[in-house]
Length: 326
Image (cartoon, rainbow, N blue to C red; front, top):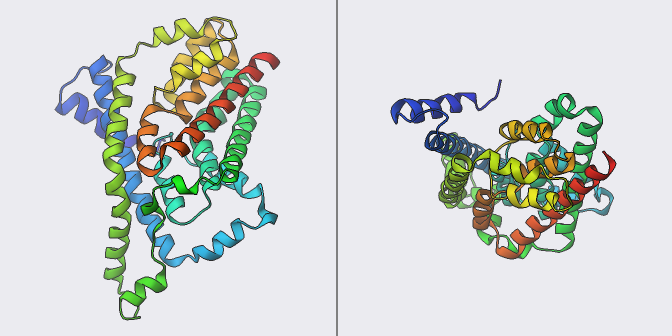
């Protein structure tokens, strides 16, 4: 069962019960989407930021950073981060809290971006549903391409040394020794520890959450009011421009991979090229306007542009390759 199913039930109760909107209507779909994702991402933000506050306090991050930046780990760290993204059931926006936690804990920038790219890109649909929909060959190739995009993208971002474009307040955290020094060099009681972890986690949560609401709100409007047949019309054509068109149409949207499957099936039925379909889905789940708004709070424009550009180029290459080889 989907671990977020109780939140979906609550969103349904609020949207269709308390507010009284019509299910599957444009407005009902938009409001339900907004309620569900706001609650889900908000809870993830709280939980992960609290967890990372505990991690920062107990874990020797300087030692970890030294290990992760040694040359003998070159490349392997990015693959590990990308694989971690594979096992996390997050969409692009709900991957951001863990990304922020990694940055706040001092994990190298490129490694955190390898996770941020792979987490939504390689998902439950590509792992479990693609074999049935498109065959095992397509599923394997797609997931290998996804890992490659995540690893190379993370390595390139690290190579460009773009750390200065991360908001500095996210990189400030106190070690255990510093916290205990402020407490007269004595250990904190359990109650004080819980309070400290909560305040530390909330500092980042309060900065980010308003942008979560704004981003999800825009995503909800697009999700509820953009007709799927409009997308099907443009992507069913068999031409060179359909792959970039798929990316252009996919980036403003915001959804997880499962909710995109009905559109993908419709496109398959109309004979749309497979690479075009996969480029469209990948753009939706990996890049989105709501995600950009949230990330803008934690990084400056140059880094955000580099991240989107690298990922878009990777998606375009993947789309054209699939159209050529399949």
